[in-house]
Length: 184
Image 1 (spheres, one colour):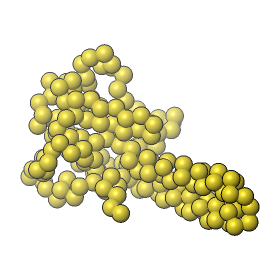
Image 2 (cartoon, rainbow, N blue to C red):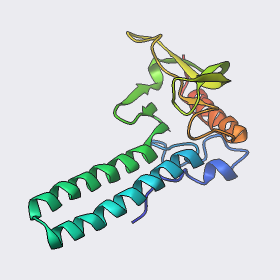
Image 3 (cartoon, rainbow, N blue to C red):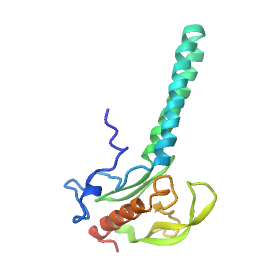
């Protein structure tokens, strides 16, 4: 079963001369690979889910079916959380920019975006309350929630911690999508 959301399209890594190396630009794409922190956390969650599934089998064999069903439900929730954690990030298409969070996704069409730029600012370290100095890819929008948008990417999130060249490539790709679809 291919997990297409797990890996970024390889064209972003190989096409240096073409900013948008795609024929089908209506498909949502993440212009970078998930970082090792995100993949590691998801792998640990899936490992935990395998133990919970094994205990489901043991409970079903020795206990009641109802208690096995509850434990199986817990395993399904852990698996869904691990897959959602892998899906988090910034996605782009010809329709706009989508910021996928753990619980909420927000899509902003290119027509509403005024500017996408990289700025030096305090950013959250791995999404925790602690902030450190880093870079962030921010977008400015017009409309009702113009000033309330969080950064699209940061140098210290789970995808780019200790990978500054990956952040630069991803930020350049999102900025190129914005330039292609006429921001402003």
